[in-house]
Image (cartoon, rainbow, N blue to C red; front, side, top):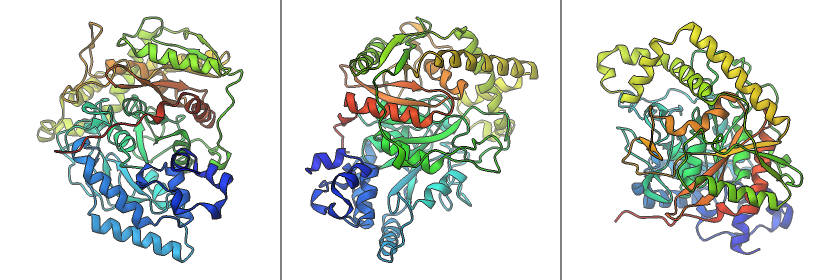
Length: 506
């Protein structure tokens, strides 16, 4: 097995192909950060590479590139991280194996709590606030042996698909640090694509795992609503809009992290009670005979920057060439009604921020978009929320009707290519004015309001080398099937093989 084959193979595939005892250090790449998370896990487990070596390789890469890309913030001191890696090696010496992330460096999205580390939410209001304990989701990652090295950057309060904030600044795309990494999991996606992280966690309300996945040419996965619960928030029943989820350099890594963070939680009543099968049961699906419905721009309803639909359709042609049946489709639904439903429920979910608005001092520190969202909640009546709930249910039924005809549905992940990170949000698309700070990402609300699993898969690059992605939607609960389809797509397209040419600080 040569070096390239080693990097490209899955961890499970290596064990099956060459046997656990025959994986040798000579097969490892010269830069350990080039290994996928699954392969890295296998190499650590088999003691072909030490946790200290892995940690040092990632720290070297972070110090080399993070000053340009600004993906990872609130870094732990190197000496402390090396000490933790030494403890991980000592555990293996005693045959103590913590889990598939044993000794692997991991940075947590800066909206999630890690015991003893700051959680800023990208806001000067909370900058420097030290968490007293792990969030529920983070405890699961710690339980698999990960070493937390810092946080990943995000927009202020995770609002907007552009990662910039007054605490840490903006995060650039791995393919051009002058362009936005997307958001709100922009730091995680950029960290993955630049190989400063093996995998990344994040959250998604309005495409926050999908959009940065597209803008950094990695996999971003929004699970079925209730599949991954993190225990944040006082409302346990009604506000089912956002969800945590995984990102990976490929589908297998994404599935492994999904398996780690998913699962029922008895203290959270809306968590799904079934479990995601173990990664050993994950494999690429057969494309032969699968039916894919292409929703495109909803028959012209959505403005889309030139070149995006063409990239998506080219990849769909590749699918068709491998046995899948692809045809245009349209949900039987008023798409403007869907947008109005989104606005109502989005405002409603932000009413919890009212104390920050009522305090004159903290209000001064809120960005205008946050103020607009909070003020919008003031006029959100019980009747409007009720009607929005009915509209959301009707949308789910419209999607369900399509899933009676198709195994999966597809549409672009974003309506514009990555833009300057100095631009807070696009004001126009094809001369059409964007009337809110998030209207330019309207394409992602269908998956959110449907509560269904959605994977971002790459579709390639435009002439300016700007990456783009496509959303793959599956029926409610079909998380494994969506990612297995995405892995089959990954194998026949090769888009993930195109890595960025990174820039160092001069």
